[in-house]
Length: 382
Image 1 (spheres, rainbow, N blue to C red):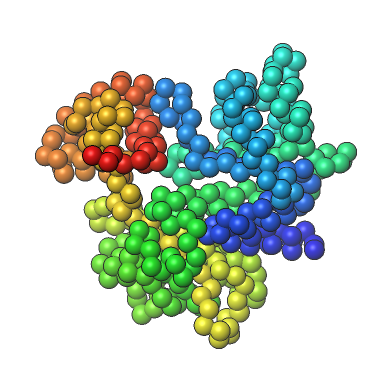
Image 2 (image 1 turned 180 degrees about the vertical axis):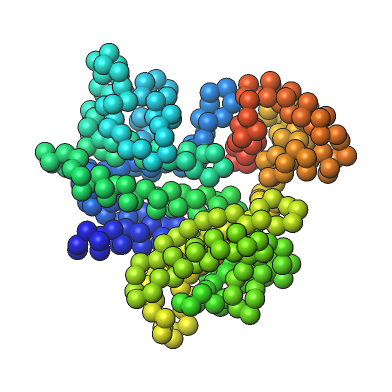
């Protein structure tokens, strides 16, 4: 395959892996081949209060072979003291940096992580990239040593840079599906899923099918609507962005479609998250009846709700503070919380300042992440 064909195949595999995790090894292997690396590790997570780290998922593969045991070894023995991590977290979005540049000269001599696990698993001459993830989260892509003595040539680093936005989009869509408990569902199964709105589009961008959740959104005409088969956004700026996303997902002349995401405004509730995902190359004259693209609508208000009592017990908050923290995690603003609870805006801000003190943090995002992290805890059997 030519470089262009290889890149387009990578994008197609990443699009497939958004719904089907079994496609990831093949996608990862082709990325390794195209970028000239021995392997790569993708980590998606966020900082929590009190310097804790929440890992949502992590994947480590070498030419398509699972290396999760290496990843577990690293997290168990080396992650807490890995000297390069603070510098990695401070990298600008999308900057590709040699691993060695993230250690000081003295650390290169004394670091257990660099001299033991990085040497053992072929990472000392690798590259690291940090990407901004959804809702203030962080994506880290670790690229292992090059496969030969050519090192990191311009063509290899250019390929890495081209892959980055598609990796970010893979994480965005996967994250949205996991939040609505829909990850792993097939295209057909998604149509029956109550937590995520699903719209199938034909090669011309016309609506072919919707599930009940998407139909409710479109019929409500609050942010999104169906105008004689055309998916429309209510606000002009949102509509222009939506049409641009659809055009990229449904290219002409057999080009590879690109996935994309945006938020959509509505009158009162938090914005919808909208993800557009191509389902494969199809011609405009394709009469097979197959969908050419998938639109996923995620409503923050429909996320799996975390009980305030659990937040109160787990985070040591008062009932009022737990209720406010829970509503923040559901996507509401402080003014919306004040209006919904009958409290003054200043009172809600005061409660939030008490939450900051108790959680040892200073941002609303930290509170949201701390609450959402509790969603993996089992529910009480009382």
